[in-house]
Image (cartoon, rainbow, N blue to C red; front, side, top):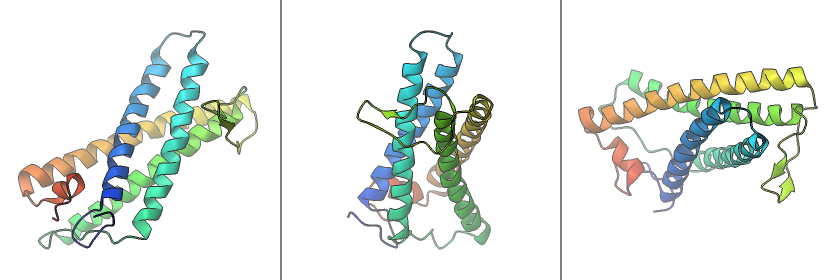
Length: 183
């Protein structure tokens, strides 16, 4: 099934979830590594690759939100309490919001630094929405890093909740994001 149903996630939603999950975790690790390697001549190259993948993550996140808006969201198991449903909605909303915030802060950093990271894998230039400003570039970068750590904390909460659903509740919520199986 390609589209979501009221009982399960469709293949498009599942693929977007897992591609974004792997890309975001890889980008957090790559970003940490980039900021902890000694200064070297190829540092701009690594930061450019990081920015290019960040643009892709932003685009895929927007596509995922559009796909989610035009598809039903599978219902939580009937025994799920009200506070758990609210917590799930808030945590998912926070994940989307912070992914977009981290990407936008990275994009703002790109436009504020000279040279910028607008050259998308050598194919075309990504329009920048900030102007060169060394102080602003530093502020955007600091916030980009701070919210990357916030995102990592939200991901940890998400994983713990998934493990709780799978191993404690055994309610098949996780199975719906892994297979065609309905919850």
